[in-house]
Amino acid sequence: MTQETHKVYTRVLKFGLKLGLKRLIETIAFGITIFAITLIYFYFIMSSELSPIGKYIFFPLGVFTEIVLILSYLENHYQINVFGENANKLFSGISIIALLIIILYSTIPGLYEISEISYGNVSLIVLFFLLTTIETGYFIFSIPRANLSEMTFGLEHQFKTLEKNLQNKKLKELPLEKAITKGIQALKIRITEEGLWGEIDSLYETAIVLDLFHSFGYKEDMEWNIPTAEGKKPIKLIKAIDTLKTIIETSETLELSYEQYKIIHSLSLYDTSVLFPYKQQIDDFYETITEETEWDFITKLNRFTAYLRSKTTPLHLIMCYVGDEIGNIKLLDKLANMFASSIEIVIKRGYARFSTSQTGKTPIEMFSRLMLALYDIRRPPLKRIQFVQAVSGQQFIEGSWAGNIGTTGYVIKALIPGENPDSIILKKAALYLTAVQDKQGLWGANIEETVIALNALKSLKDLAEQEE
Image (cartoon, rainbow, N blue to C red; front, side, top):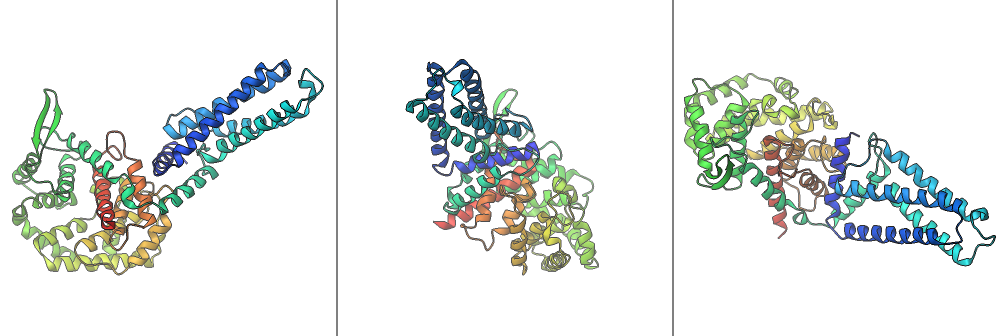
C-alpha cells in the first residue's frame, strides 16, 4: 500500500467515526488511560521503594512508549505525518518489549531497595500491567498504524467496524449536502473573468461545469462574486455560456470529437437552437456507425484510460445524449443496440472481473458509463444483475472502485437506478467521496473529477430524499 493510499484510507475512517459516538468515547477512553498510566509513572518515580536501577530501566521505556502512542494517535486521527514507512514495526516491537520488561520487573526483587514487596506495590504493578496491555493492544490493533507496504489487521478491523456502523445509518445522515455545497463554491470561484473554467482544456472543462450547474437547476442569470486582482467582482453564468457560444460560432471547422460535441450538448441545455447547424453532421455520424460492428466499438472502449477521459472516451457516448436532445430515434436505437451488445461481449469475455488498474482493458468505469447511457436514453439494460455482481466484488474496502474518484462517481451513477437508500455499497461509496474532498472543496485537485464527484453526490442526495 502506498503512502497516498494509506492517507485516503485513514481519511475515510476519520469521516466514518464521526457518524456516531464511537470516536468521542474512544478519545475519552484514550485520554483516561494515558492520564492513569502517567500518574502511576510519577508514583513510581517518587516512590522510595524503587531502586535507581528500576528507575533507569522502567521509567524511560514507559515514557517512550507513551510518547509513541500519543504521536501515533495524533497521526491517525488528525492526519499529522509523524512517522515514516517502517516505523510501525519498530514501535510495535518496543511496546511488546516494554510489556516483557514490566513482567520481569515484578519478579526481580533486586530492583527494589527492600527485600520484600508490599501488597501496595504488587497492586500497582498489576494495575500498571493491565493498563499497559490495554495501551499496547490499542496501539497495535485499534488504529491503522500500519506498515504501508501491506494491508494489516488494524485496517481490516476498522473498516469492518465502519461497515457495521453504516448498516444502522441512513444515507441522508452522511455529509452529502455539506460536500456538495463546498464543491459548488469551489467551482464558482475558479471561473476566470473571461467566463472559462480549467487550465488543461478550458473549453471542455467549462462545458462539463455548465452541464453540472444545469443539473442543479441554475439559470443563466445566476450571479456570484469571484476574487480578482482588483477585489471581488460579480459574474453571471451567462458569461460562460456566451464565451463558449462565441468560440464555437467563430471556429471555421468543428472537429468530430467527444470534447467538441460535449461543448455543443452543454450549450444546448440552455439554448436548444445551438444544435440546429449540426444536424447534418449528426446524421452523417449515424451513417458512419451503421457499418460499425460491436467489435469495432470494443476496440475503442479498450483505448479508455481513467485519467484521460475526455481524450479517449468514444464519441458514441456523448452522441447518445445529443441524439436524445434532438429526438433522433434511429441514432438512439443504433447506439442502444451497440451498447447492449458491447456489454454482452464484456460479460462473455470475462471482463466483469475487471482490472483494478486505471488502464486495464474494458475497466469498470466504461462498463458503468455504458449502463448509465442506456438508462439516460430510457432504454434500461437487461444485464443489471451481472453489473451489480461485478461492481460488488470489485469495491475496495474504503468504498472506492479502482481507488479512483472518477471511476467511483460513474459506478455510483450507474448503480442508483434500481437501488434503494439502504444499499451498503452506495453508503460506503458516498462516505469515500465525502472523505477525499480536499480543503479547497475539489476532488483530485481538478475540474473534471470534481464535476463527476458532485454529479454522483447529487444523485445520492436525491436518492436519500426518497427516504422521507
